[in-house]
Length: 121
Image 1 (cartoon, rainbow, N blue to C red):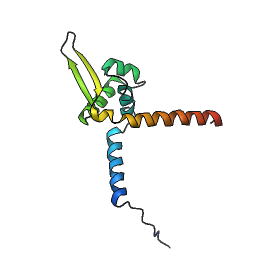
Image 2: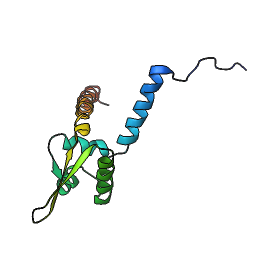
Image 3: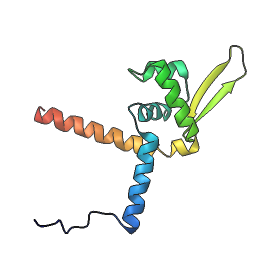
């Protein structure tokens, strides 16, 4: 039996990039994080507005995802001391750097949808 002689491991700069991609995917993984970030790219939002805008997310899951995003420095939680107390979420500077990613995803999605509509798939 012949063994595979091709080296499938990544080395040097490629391995460094693969680790960076893995780290990014770890932070942004799941169904909801990019959906939340994409909505916050346009404006700061209150919890109730996010719950309305992110179709299908439950309140419990939204709370957990917002905490994860805040822990990872992608969003900022603003608490206004007014009566009644209001909490608003916005992208941090680091989170705003992801707008390039969300813009690219949107462009890809629009192009892909158009291709699928043309081919009837």
